[in-house]
Image (tube, rainbow, N blue to C red; front, side, top):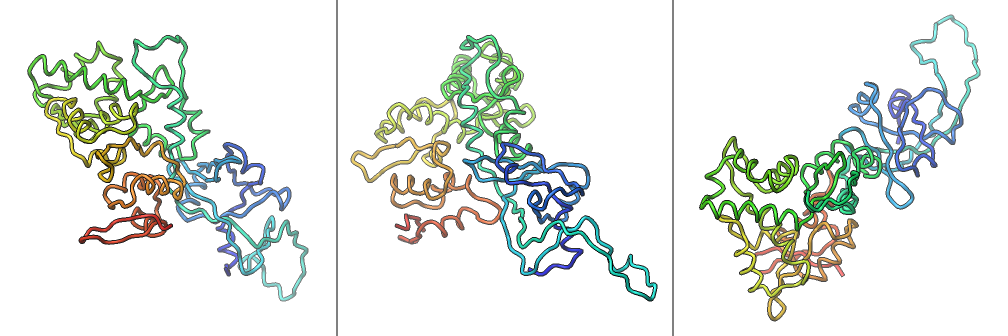
Length: 381
């Protein structure tokens, strides 16, 4: 790849990025003009936006270890690092007089120029979607089962600072994921809310509504906060409300898919597989007043095997599958030979990035076929 001197200068104003640094859990990438040794310096191509971000005084963070692929993060985005080659040699020098700075004296003078290194490769930063399963795994070590189950006085869990170090994602991406997943801060430490606790929270509120012969739409947010104040703390109750209710001003309604998936996660794990007729009956009967189940609500949580006799509902939550695409698809296709795009999307969506959406990933790693006008995906092998 041919580049002018000016373009090469914008690749990086020199990043101190050593091989040992890459293997560290977290390392701040500092841009410094002082060079010690060419082996200590790697060249990194950055976009105009990233260069402006660096020049504003912000930092890039390298995250990874010997067991994980290294990524580089800004405050809001994650990038994968790809080594690329140049067609010409790039010389690394502490300074260089460009043509417009050389005085026209009529004579030519040769000047010795120190060269710190000759480069034929550099690193590209490619925007990527972080794999955040490790965040859930880290918090799952400290399940929260309710205030009455807390027997240890000192705080347990992971601080946000600890999560930033161990999770290969930007700070903003970690925050967004914490807001979406069933996690909450308890005495300053982040923990995963136990499925049994969440089931109990929804069921307790439903029992109050049934006792008062009210639907959720007929009560206010203040009513919920008052009733659930006996069940757990204000912060935990607020998190549960955000997970399972749609709040529009003072108007409330259940999120049917979120509630249905929660109850499926509670009912299925012990048996792993459930007679479909019995499951659908028990599932609907356990729902809060006004919530109707739908088989599509099981997508990403369980699958219905109509090929078995009797037909079974099998526990298969997305968050328990491996993050490597081939391993994940192998498990999915062993459980069900053919998948529609709609049913497989919740299992593949977390592995997509800016370059490959769900359909593109399946085109690359699976085989497609059309049966009676419906497109299905199956194993390539």
